Image (cartoon, rainbow, N blue to C red; front, side, top):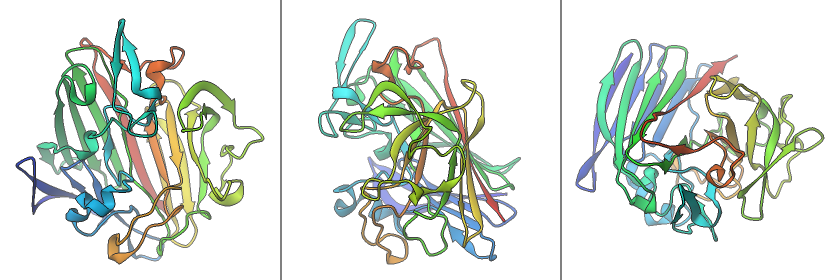
Length: 348
């Protein structure tokens, strides 16, 4: 197990962007930037014995901050916060006080506002090689940032095990009641040649999904997956039932005990022999098959197009702070926010 820190020579907010490489005894490697805790590489050995990178991104850090990329920004591999997904009208109320966030997606607030945690420099506070290669990042979000209340301290630890498990452990505390709903936004493709993920085989342990309005904002209503295109309780290819013009951009309510670490989803790809299993303590997983993906000159000069990746974004119910019957997403000073999500890769 090894940890390596690499200076990129790029500076943001007077801090240098550092790449941290975690590697295990099998030769697997995960590379993470301290800008947005972006997972830049997740390299594993496929069934053919080839080293394969299963996440989309760029070869050079500079491309993550280029105007071309940011003009149609897909949040490649970054942490999302303070609040993942969409907040209706960018509004919420805590203890009788109304708050208004920036409307960054139509009339709604998406992924934390104009400058979310994905565009922040994070401090590297510790690294370790035992029992697993690991790195812990920290960010202090000040009261009023993006109009959220309270000073919020967030730590995110990445661990790579010898079983090809990438473990993400989140922790946060606040000095004032504030909304929090963190997730990570890696785009996965398990095919050795990339391209459309329609034939990837997917299973999601969810009997219900969340109704959304015209702008994909959760309304509060649960819909059974039975007899719908959203039924992934038994594995099937993404393309089996999808609307080819929409794909999937939906939040699934996982069949689980609240707070327990359980298997959320499993995705297989035949030609690589790779499977990606996602475990989480979170109550929902948002499945996105990248309808809006349009990125030029990605890794190896490849263009990334719609449906060239899938995301499994583990989190609490989107817009939950406006829907009282959903689990609370308000963190208070006497509480500690915790979350664990594991991406486990298996090879046939």
